[in-house]
Image 1 (cartoon, rainbow, N blue to C red):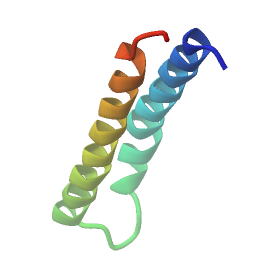
Image 2 (tube, one colour):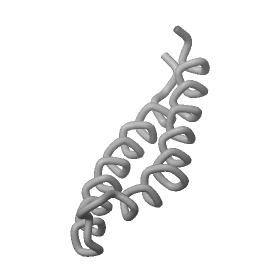
Image 3 (cartoon, helix red, strand yellow):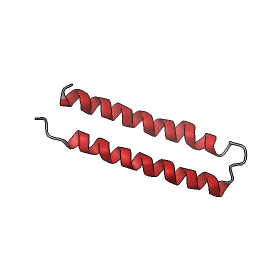
Image 4 (cartoon, one colour):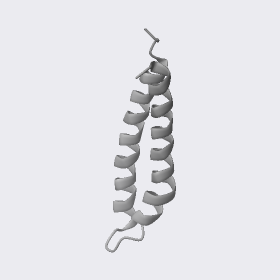
Length: 67
């Protein structure tokens, strides 16, 4: 797989993750039975921390030199 194809794949994977979290996971989290606001916010912190780690990895892939 060429670096260009890997960069495109990483970009679309990142976009899918952001859209899924923003428009699917976040609203549904607070509709789940038994999930209070403090618990939902705690879950959100964990989810977005994981997203930030993934974004960091994607940034490394995008900035890697094409050898």
